[in-house]
Length: 329
Image: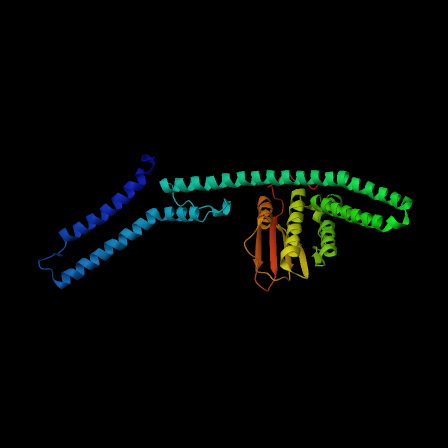
């Protein structure tokens, strides 16, 4: 390890030695002298010489150690590994090699993090699908049979029991509706069957009917969103779903707008509400949305000011190769 940094050591040593040699030669080869007691003009010469040596030394050290300072700043500001945090390699020496190793580490960490997050999201989707099927095929079917049995019991029961049986049937029907709603939320069937656009419109209608918050979806005219990769469609759907869920739970909003835009390079989705804004620290929902965007090579930003509502913007590049293994089925 010591041998790897000998070049930097000698560079600093020789640079400072050169400054001292220059100062010595100046005293030896010029008329400049220092008497005792020191005269005013000699003090001025010494001060000027000291300032010049200090400036020269400062310039040299900044040139030699500047890349280390940039590397230190990058490490201290590193919250999550990302390629856009790479530090420029300005020269081929010890500092340059350390900087290149740091950049390689960022690339490896970002790749591994995306792979791990993608695997976790894929496992989450599989588990959601399994729970959705169990709810639909198990609990849902059981409640359906219960409704049929109560209907038969209603026909055969004495008139005095009719109100109680009707109340039980209504509770069973509400439970069945709740199970079906949860099953749809866990497994976005319209996304698989109809595509992203109709799935978003269906999601907005469900949220409006359930919460009273008016949700409007604006899709890009003349653009087929089905051309997007399955992972991108599912990621956008889940991000919009979580954003609208946050609007209903926390924003106290009366309406929300979902704008989907597509250009040559990227998909931009904006979810804006007219709620109170000024949200607190991000929770697991917001972190999950950010991870979904990042795993697709995109980014997510949130603008929330008190009294001005909240705007969530997600940008995903087209043709992304950051596949997560997820699919809407």
